[in-house]
Image (cartoon, rainbow, N blue to C red; front, side):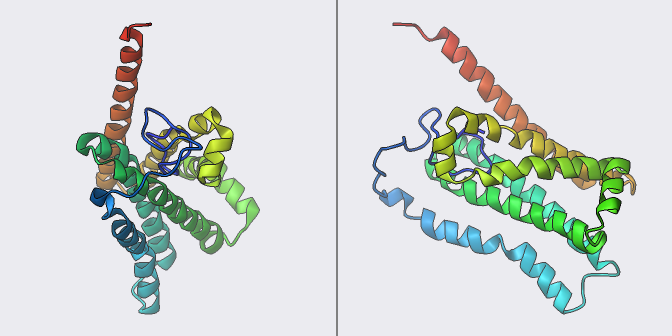
Amino acid sequence: MNSETSALSGSGGVQARGLGRHDGARAAPVRNSDRWVVPAKIAVFVAAWYPLARIVLFGMTGNLGANPIEFITRSTGLWTLVFLCITLTVTPARKLTGINALLRFRRMLGLYAFFYATLHFTTYLWFDKWFDVAEIVKDIGKRPFITVGFAAFLLLLPLAATSPRVCARKLGRRWQTLHRAIYAIAMLAILHFWWMKAGKHDLLLPKLYGAIMLALLGWRLLAWARARMASRTRPTR
């Protein structure tokens, strides 16, 4: 996706609407007002390991409940959604606050979303299915929530693979187009969560995260529509 909305990119690389540094330009000196960014990024980096540390601690102390596999699967899945939501909130927050330095957190947050999605998927493949390909294929074809979850993870792979700035520079506009898929991935993740919870008639969290994702998507569509209108009404020289 472009530099305004990418979940797995940093503020560098392909530029859109002047939000980042142009290729070949020298890095701007750190301003006094941005000195908080480095310690804040360190704090976010450390805090983002909390969900995994919690799982490990619970496992070591025997507190994963009656079904440890289910606990790990659902915990990692929920934190994937949390990081997706936070990542997609970065650009609206930057627009509302005018703090451009917020964009420097986006790539890291997006990669944590991918990290927990990978743990979620690996838990299913390994501990639930023991890498039984026949069972996995049967599950994907038979259970809709597994189908959409699998599709979401597959779509997430190229975004993670192309997250480095060098990929953004090499792919150009194709990189922007590719990373717009993050919204489709987010909605598939919500659908995966919704269908998984529907069988237990427990839709509170799916509705909450669905509302957040719809609001973020609506904001993006509104921003796109305004940009289109502005470009059409801009006088030509």
